[in-house]
Length: 282
Image (spheres, rainbow, N blue to C red):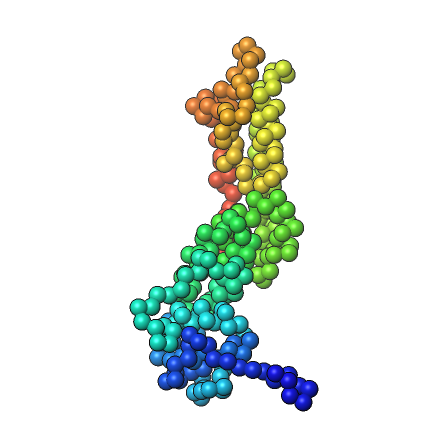
């Protein structure tokens, strides 16, 4: 609405939180008023509380979050006006950006139900939005989630580039790059062990292909030191036909003494890698 050349802020009241007997009102960043009952705050939030003066009508305490975020967040505090047989909202199908905004608001105002729900959802997002999950976990002190997300970040083929643009939590970028370089060093050591175990028969075609497969895995993700070592190699590498060459059976048979020797060395490298949380000194 325009008046005398000036744009006026037009406020509206949320359809979900509009109880006439509410004693507290909050205003979203996009001018939506939410009317709540302060009696719910103590049991549901560590931070939210009734302002010193009660707010009614268009007089409301401003919050920096938009209405979409607050509308979901407040449903973890009290049932919407006039609702019966009420269930707290699901966050599974939320737009990704809206979900992360909600998760941050839940932590900011310490809304217990929303915090737990968002954390549970984050654990399922580790492998497809690992950098944003790592930001969230590091910012709010979720150790196990940070460890899982940090390692999942290594799977990105453009890991360093993605990290520079997406790891925005204070102090997290240099620590993750240190963690990345630790894995790269471990990958180089594992590659050397693998190379030293190659069959000396120069005519053998299996070992060079195994080595190339392993190098590709390590270069794609340094965290693949052990887990991708000989997974399903028998499905795509044919046995060597050179008489007396045991390369194929050695590669895919974990009961073979030769296999156990070099895979155990690599497994120990993998196991001795510190968790990301230890790099952060949590």
